[in-house]
Structures are given as structure tokens and as C-alpha cells.
Length: 109
Image (cartoon, rainbow, N blue to C red; front, side, top):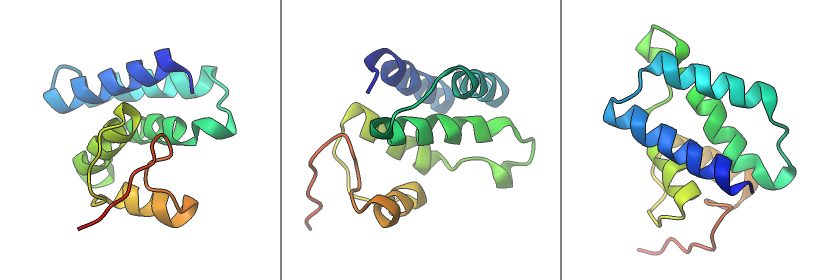
């Protein structure tokens, strides 16, 4: 996984969650990244995180990516351990059978 893009994606998520970047700015950055980058099969999580950021462009908050999903992507890209709770994490688990592809995490009560 490209470290620079991973770090930039985490920073963009952080700036979005903190309100330092508008949804429009974040979506524009993500759309540009998706249009100019080719992702390998080992970068599915990174591509999904950037795609989630691109979905922030809509004025209707009902169609925005949920904050908990953004936190999940940030945590996985940063390799922070957390229990699976967000819709994005459950989708990832269902599709790929691994909650965080960048780490070997065991979710035990």
C-alpha cells in the first residue's frame, strides 16, 4: 500500500471530522485521487476509504458517508485496533472475511 496516499487519506479524514475541510473540499480531493490513481488488489481498503470520502459531495446529509464509517477507515488505515461496529466494517467483513486488511486483529469480547 502506498504510504504517502495512506497518510494523506488519514489526514483528510481527520481534517474532515475536525471541520477543518468542508465536505466539498474533501469530496473534490477524493474525486481527483480516484481519477488519477490506479489501485492494486492490495489497496482495496485505501480505495474504499477514498471512495467514501468522494461520497461527501451531496448536499443532502442522508447520502453522506457516516462519521462512524470514516472513523473505521481511519482506524484501519492507521492500524488502530477497535471492535467492528460501523456499517462499513460489517460490509468489509462480509465481503472480504477480514475486518481490517492491514492488520491481524482479533475481536474478542
